[in-house]
Image (tube, rainbow, N blue to C red):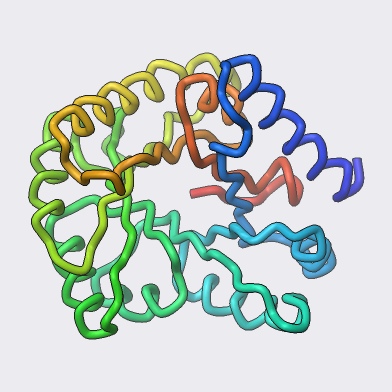
Length: 238
């Protein structure tokens, strides 16, 4: 398939899966992970009107933000950049100057650094709490049992809105293997929401990548992070 066909296939899968799950397709945001995208494909993506783009490292985010400027139209249409990878505290301020949403907050210290930077930048920052539902020692994310407490602490901060939860299921060739991790994240989400933590801002579940995004949508994902299926093999999505 060429780029247009791959893009159409992903969007059609998102829409059909949502409808089968009795959900509205417009509830789900397709975050295109751009790290290894070819310039021509990235340009086509923007010409199609796609505006939700994700990067996992600050330097790649900065490079891509400059690269896409000529393709944003006249007058230019803004891009919604998503920081989806592990964020070091010393890179918070630079990241917040570009990113609309940080998916990967995994500690109180990082949340506090974001609050400090948000105050200095005189803005309110939307963040998500990354939960290590697979309990993998090699993955970032707060432990399942600590997620609610950290969410409560973040909810007291000024300049920060906790808008949801994120997870990455352990890698597997079988999409069904991811389901239990998505179910677990949804359960944590529902418990936090029941306790009114985050208020009306708390409404997103960021889960599902190339290999399992349809399963994630069936289990309630409002954001899916897709790179390989769109831009080809070898595109990291973490």
